[in-house]
Amino acid sequence: MISKPMEHALLDQLNREFSSAYLYLAMSAYCSHLEFNGAASWFKLQYEEEHLHATRIYNYLVEQGVHVVLGEVACPPSDFGKLPDVFNTALTHEQSMTSLLNDLSDQALKEKDHATYNLLQWFVNEQVEEEATLGGIISKLKLVKEDGYGLLMIDNELGARQTASSAA
Ligand code: FEO
Image: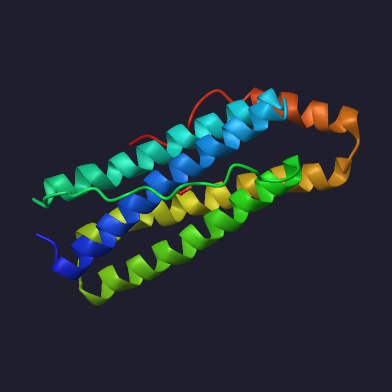
């Protein structure tokens, strides 16, 4: 049993995870449009990963007996600028998710809701990995700047990613 305020907060987070999935799918489409097919594939896996995050929260809410009422998913932009801009936007997005998840963890602790706190700690740890991965990609993109060969190498490397990294 979770409190009503926590129920609402987790439903908001569920919506944000779906919005993140949608954002990354839009980024994947945009990278395909730019013909960075490796980056497109990378963002498609990121989309799947966010879907798994949403499912993790959804499953928890159902287990807690919550009637999950789904809201609208935010419409993502259609233009993200140059390739480094796409990744910078993704990092800024993840940083804001980290901040929101920290606030949720604080709320769980305040309510002495340890089950929800445990769920959220998984997400907080996941954020460390997500921010580090994006930071690494951005560093490489900074090194090559506008160099076409360098961008092609990075795009190939991004295309080598095989799976969404987290299980639901
Ligand atoms: Fe679900 Fe990328 O955080």
